[in-house]
Length: 219
Image 1 (cartoon, one colour):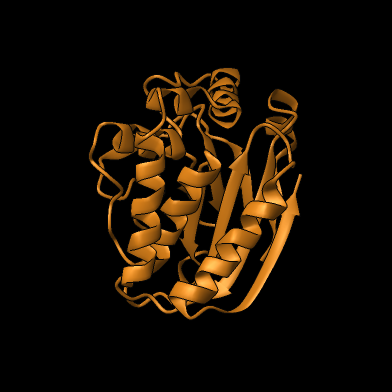
Image 2 (tube, one colour; image 1 turned 135 degrees about the horizontal axis):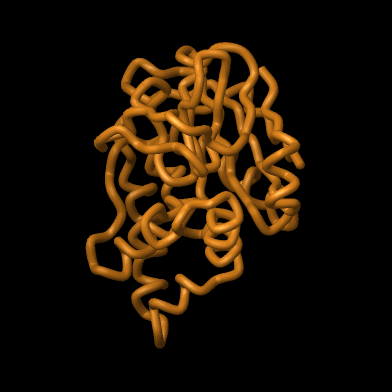
């Protein structure tokens, strides 16, 4: 399985880069140590003189600019990192799903970058990151059908299954999942991606009994 960036998307968003982490994992409830790390990051943000300033970070700004370049309103379709940060600032904390998803959300908040997470048992063939086309939709996790036209999306041989805004029910991680790919999405270049793929790998090892972990930078 390869992850690539479509050339047409690159032309509109030339600094797009992806940090990919594949791993065998064990999906269980998040341990207390992981929950403590999540709470620590939340406290750090809320203790800032102006917590809302995190929403103006370069990574968040780059995601918004990419959405505009692709024809999507970033005020209506937010990147998942921005959505998580807004949730934290509003005092709602971070969602608690399972150790694998919770690790992903923790690193997304730390990096300010959206991260897609896909169960490889439910993908088919290679994965391409491209602009969504007219008429394309998928059912988002816990959401209605998402209009994908103009949205950056991950697609395999079966069609779109993820985006920086929301991933699909088709490839979502469940209790039966054991093989995943996590994709960190940066529209501001590859600087720092190696740090964050390493962070994901470390946390997957520590909290999701990960093995066969591989890391790759694309773009």
